[in-house]
Length: 590
Image (cartoon, rainbow, N blue to C red; front, side):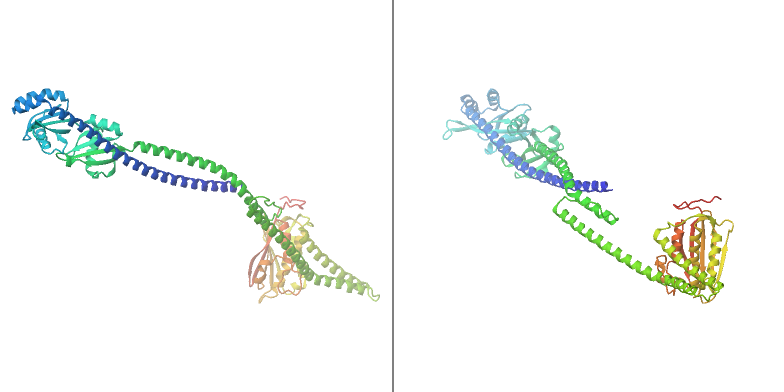
């Protein structure tokens, strides 16, 4: 039991430690995750802005290169001569070689009225929409993007003069551009480490994302905040930060640029941090558990020793050792308990001495009257015997009275001996309980207390009432019960009757003594079988019931109060028929 208590204490301490460490670890994980996430979002937001700036710078450089190439073409005399013809087929034929020299994705020539004369594009043939968009961009020199047929072009427009720009004649315009496709965005993405996508009229016209993610992004594009705001978007089950730039003011139609930054590297870093914090938490739990177990041995073991000492003292063992080590508080508590234990023992010894003296006084008070009576009878009769005028018959009568007094004193002393030595004087032999009861009844009838009381003996099995008993002591026990019953019967309002009933069982014999008196007083029912307890008797030592109960217990039974009401008071003495006690000499055979 103490071992289990120590285990429970240590398990409780370790459980508290684990709960604290887990709480701190979980809180740390949440705090670290939140701080890292905010830091990562800030970094990613900065990266997105940097990526957008990088894209715009690269676009500006490409556009400057186009403008420079257009300026070289505008100074080409062959082109100027071609444009002076104002013949559209001639210009279209002559422009083929110039387009091949320029090597751009989009090449167009327009007259001075901004009407497109010819357009060349890589891939699909130019449509009317593209021609119209080219004329629109000539009229709006600040615009640089053309979106047509699912293609997006970044273009530059340069006027073509005959002579110088200030005083010459405007011959037309040279338009050249390159297509913004996955390859172009790939170079930008490689430079910034991000993904990008162009949307025209709500459709993806160029993107570095896989086709599946392009469709998913197209569905979520309308929910992205405009104006350069950063939002979180999930693509393919992975989180991204996205920012959208509206280019509609610089292009024909609706055009947006979306730049995406993946959260995957940041999430991986967060997962690594979580693993590290968890490992630290597990290490803290293991180390803390070892420290707590060691600490519990230092702190709780003295407390457990003190608790065992208190428990042992409560069970009557004042010699159990108390802890001599431990914390200062434990030592102070141990010293205080030791002082308290010594005081309790001293008070207990004093109380026992007081009770012993009180018991001796009560016994002396109870026994002295009868002893004086017996001694007075012996002294008086002995004094009469000294007279020379007595006849032989008178001397015999006096001697008989002296013998009765001596026998009474001897019986009184034997009773005290039985109570004090716990049955050491018992000698059991097989005998008839019925015959013992008859002797007790016969002896009772000669007692003055039995005068006027009808005493009756009943037995349900006269032949079978055999048991291993001390006949003399059992007779005295039955006699005492009958005498008490006679004394009680004197107070009966009607008939005065005492009945001794003997009932034989297989293993035991029950002797019930019933009287017609007024019953046992309430104030002594709980202490009936204690020595020197009586209620209103003019004589007697108060040892009758005590002696009867002691004799019954020595025979494996007891005396109990079965009923106590006016007209019927029943005391029952139970004894074992074959008792194997320490003093039993013979076991009866049936």
